[in-house]
Image 1 (cartoon, rainbow, N blue to C red):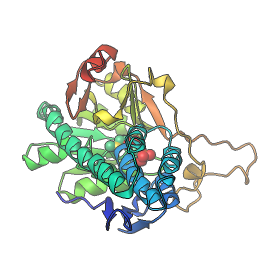
Image 2 (cartoon, helix red, strand yellow; image 1 turned 45 degrees about the horizontal axis):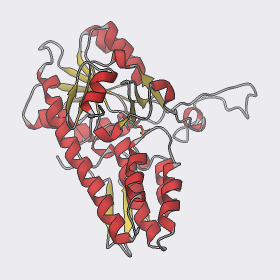
Image 3 (tube, rainbow, N blue to C red; image 1 turned 30 degrees about the vertical axis):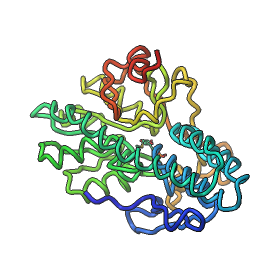
Length: 345
Ligand code: MRU
């Protein structure tokens, strides 16, 4: 597969810049943003031009190099600014902590750490793919459909994605399976990004609206649900794109394995449970007028019209069959098995 180059450092450390694929324009247009200031990178993260937990971390890491081009004092400030763009996905905090420890924070030194973070994520995706293949191998013959939500694909990472990594490898090995991609309201990362990248890679992909998931499960089409994660708490509760929890509940009812795929950088042992995960709330315009088309009355038009737009929800550990990481598979999922996997005790 040959994914679009979503994140690239262009030039040398002292004068170079960050080039990001503008994911808000996909699939209609392949356009790139040249980020030459920390504010450019902050804005790109905030408005989801670059999105997905690992990709946000990689972009922010390169953002600190841009800051350091203005002098050594600018990098720590940039870390604070970039960390404030989105609160739920945890990878960015770990990456920025690594960059904060670079002394002195020269562009050269920061660039080599940012490139290492980028490369490590690429390798982690591959390892997740290998470790997750067993779930595709275990698909029942009569239910070879794999349902995924949002985009935990190549576009969201430095490699072949997390939830999509086993799919890419299974496709490479000519294993029989098909993918159902939830469109993922309100910003359609499932249809605009996941269906786009999987179908472009030649994977048999069927797009469904979010409210069709129960129906396709009831028909018996789905043998596995696999999604990414934005933050995994110490007890295994997992935040991911809003709507993921719905799928976990549905999967339990239909006795379908519900699997999370994520690198170790998505685990946050300092967050004890899902209740402690901050959930990003986004602008209601994403629901009422997402792509320039009014789809609901606004509060200005109709006073008393309320909108609630949480970007993520939390799936309790008890609904998660397994978590596939770059280091193996956690199954069953609870605090002890997670602590063991993370070698915390
Ligand atoms: O709001 P987004 O598009 O950044 O949300 C992305 C997700 O929820 C992904 O599933 C998650 O970040 C995992 S990406 C490998």
